[in-house]
Image (cartoon, rainbow, N blue to C red):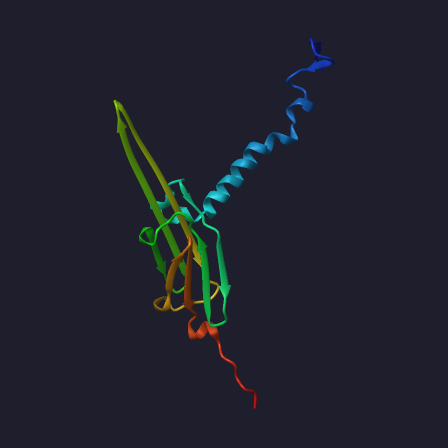
Length: 162
């Protein structure tokens, strides 16, 4: 083995050394890349091209099973009801909200233009089928509340044993 002295303490091993070629932490970049690709594949935005913008946030959500219906509460502070797009199908609900503001000011040779935007996107899969036409939504104090009835099949029914 070729060993040379350097300004640091200890010998330098040649590049042909087995100890120097094997680094157990060398897989970290590949592992990181793998996990990033898995997370990206699971993100709901991959299903809709319009949502690819990284400025969209995933809002906090509560889903409550009331027996014969579901209640969904979605926190979307800063959004007006006119900015919300809501789609309910028999197995999922999709919520998208976007709000943009633009403000211009000018005084004595000074011109300022400010822009801001806020967006939320969330797709929620129901654990059971629902009747999409029974969905009702209400926005109150930054929280979107959605109520939707389950289908008869999803509810099931009690049967008396004879």
